[in-house]
Image (spheres, rainbow, N blue to C red):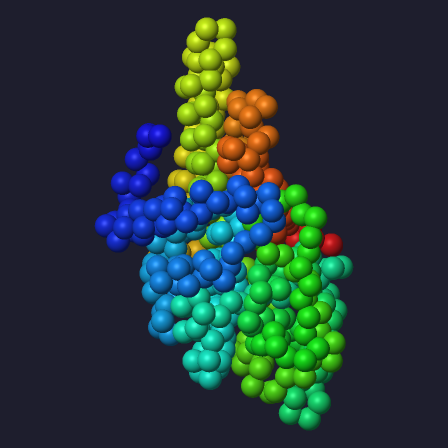
Length: 384
C-alpha cells in the first residue's frame, strides 16, 4: 500500500535499514505463526528473545552494556514494525527494554548494570516490571507492596498484577513503598518467596505472557535497591519510555488492519464488482488512511522532540491517547469491511482489534491521559 504522505521519506538511511530488517524478521518469524500463538495463548519468548537480541532490538535506545544506542525515531520505527506483527511482540520488546532495562540503566548501580544489562540486551535474560497492583492501577501512589529494612537487608511483601513476561522473567524490577518513599528493587525471580503465576482466559494479548507477582517475605540484600531514584519519578519515567514505543507501535497495528482491508476490498466481489468500488467502502478506507497517517505524523513529531531532548510526559500522553484510539477505530472499520471473515484468525484484523483493547488500557488508561491533557490545558488537576 502506498505511503501517500511519504512519511518514511523523513527517515535516514539507518532508520530505513532498521525498518526493513524488523519488517523482514516479522514477516519470516512471526506472521506465519502468530495466529496460532494467539489461538493457543502462547508466546515463544525464550526462542525469540535471542533472535531479537541479535538484531539489537532489546534496549536498543540505551547506550553501552551491549545495547545498540540508537536514536528515538529508530526505536519508534522498530516498535511500529513489531506491532504490525502483533502487539504482544512489541510489548515483549518494550517491557524488556523500556520497563526492565531502562530503570537499571538509568537508576541502577554499576554492579546492577554489569550483572543484568548485557545479558538482557542479548536476550539471554528476560525482565519484567512490577508496578500495577490488583487494587491500584491508575493510582500507584497508594500501592500496598512494601519493603521494610531488616538490618542491611530488605524484606519485600505484596503483589502485582497484569505483568508482561512475569512468569518467564529472570529478573523483576519491582516498585514498593518504603519508609523513605517509593523505591525500586532488582529482584532475581529465583529468590525464595517470589512467585509469578500466569494469568489465563484472556481474550486480548493472547500471544503474550501476562502474570501476577507475589512477594512473601522476599529477602533482598541492600544492593538490590536502585540507588539512583526515590519516589514515583522512577516508575513514571519508565512508563514514559514505554509509552513512546506505544505511540509508534499502534501505527503498525493500524497499518496492518488498513492493508488487510484494502486488499480484501479489491478482491471481494459482491453485486458483480469488488466491494472496494462502492462509495461507502471507499469512504471507510479513506478515513482509515487519514487516521493512520495522522497517527504516523504524531509519532514522527514526538520522535523528533525526543531526539532533540524536548519531549514532555504530557506530549507522550497526547500521542498515546490519540494514536491508540485512532488505531482501534481503524481496526473496527477494517473488521466491518471484511464482514464475517473479519472475525477469523485467517486475517490479522480481529487479533489486532482485540489486542488494542488492552493497549487502550495499559500504561495509562485513556481516562488518565485525558486528565493529563486536561490539566495541561487548565492548570487544574482532576484526578481526585
